[in-house]
Image (cartoon, rainbow, N blue to C red; front, side, top):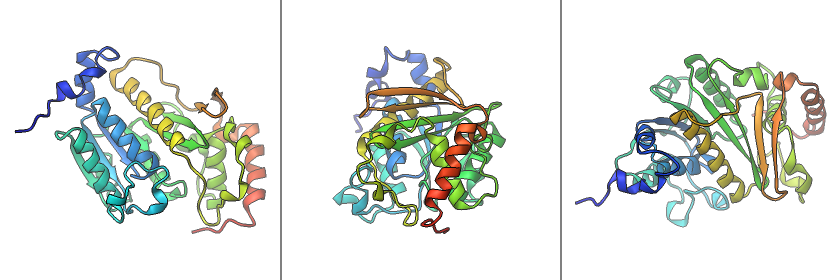
Length: 290
């Protein structure tokens, strides 16, 4: 006989949430595209918060290179599908969790199903998944689904949320049909206007857009989960202010700094336009489109 009891498992949440609010969390459904760095920790964090329903998407398997930051990456899970491992971890926390897996990742064919009945979309796609990210955020805007992206940066995290009826992803980042290099730079600039992390990067060559890789830390991943899950909590129970784009938050634990950014016009803001121009020039010689 199972010893699991939802009420007992999440009873220590009570105090910061009411029993009635905990019941609301139990009925919420979150879609998470990407089961690697932030995706895995988003899923397990929300599961421990008591969120009861998940759509999980990822087409990749775990590798040794994932060990420094991905909660599902262990010797025991090498070469296993990320989406299956994360689903297993969520069910190990809450065996009653309602989980639908999308082992092909998110694409044009399964996107309607992926977002069906969803209360929040948490962006956890690989930085370079431009097409999937653009399609998913556009679909969220069309369907009135709140969406949040939390970027792990150095030893900190930056978050942006896009709420129904307010500035959406495309309004803010203004990707359109631009080349991949410009999308990459626009994403970097728009995610973290404060740029707190840039000052302590000690090996600049570790950022290599041509090879589609960059440095990461588990501290940043954990901070992303805390910030994103708190946003989810506020949205779900309707209590607490959620900052929506063009507002953003960037907290850096290494620098002991928290910055609230506000960029009217998103990437049309003069400071962003200058940074984008400089970034495109900097990376144009090494970036190779996929």
